Image 1 (cartoon, each protein chain N blue to C red):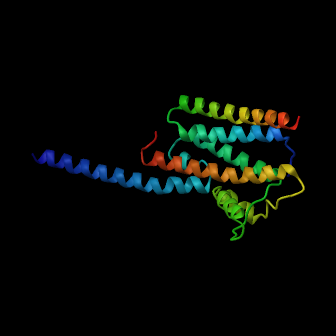
Image 2 (image 1 turned 90 degrees about the horizontal axis):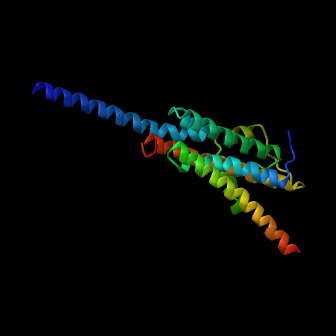
Image 3 (image 1 turned 135 degrees about the vertical axis):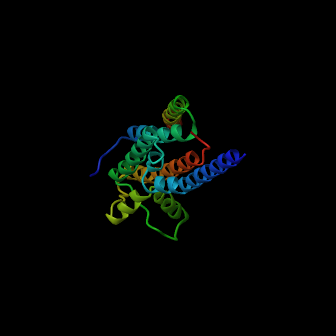
Length: 60
Length: 143
């Protein structure tokens, strides 16, 4: 079974899975886990968007 | 007086058996967590955390395979290949099943396949973090 993900979708899936593990393993209470997981997810996806625009600006 | 001594002796035995259970769990939990993602948490009754960790690692590993990522075999060649193997092996049984089934041959013609390779390596690394977390729960460092 093979499937084709766009670059952005691949980055979002990666961010979701990594944030889940980071949130659970790096914090102690459920609330902190949720907050830290969301924070990591936003940083992952935000980093992708910022890097994409930076590359676009470099090209143009 | 005798009662106090008996209580102390019973308390001491209970503390010893508790410590033995903790030390046994401190060995079993990370090993189980490494072999099957999330199992280290599940055997310590952290059901939701265990299931979420299992889901995250499974999705990453199988998405990587679905994108035709490469599963590294044991090698003593290029440093990046050696590190790729170390990362992959972190996925425990998933890695051995993938190797046994000959999955993860890789495909250099697809750009996304390279993402798949990284997905598989990161799935292994995330599983190692999960196993360490299971160990911390077992020794009481974390709830």
